[in-house]
Image (cartoon, rainbow, N blue to C red; front, side, top):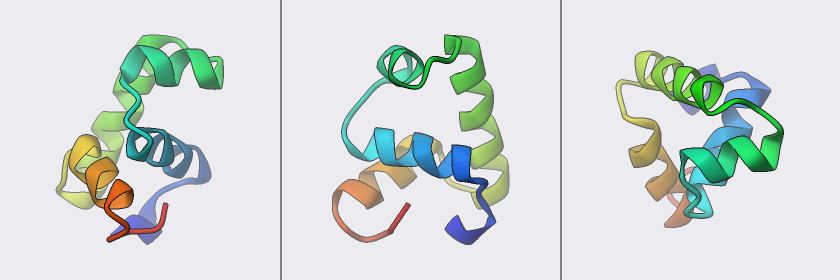
Length: 65
């Protein structure tokens, strides 16, 4: 499932794993907040999990971004 993600999507998942919110991710990556929201929607469509669920799994060490 996580293998389906693009490098940018994996970067966003890693940021989520660090506990960052949408605004903080956008600032850290130099993106618009709306772009991050779109990436999260794509992550959800590809994996069947919300980006935040995946981020939590990364934080717990259950997934590698």
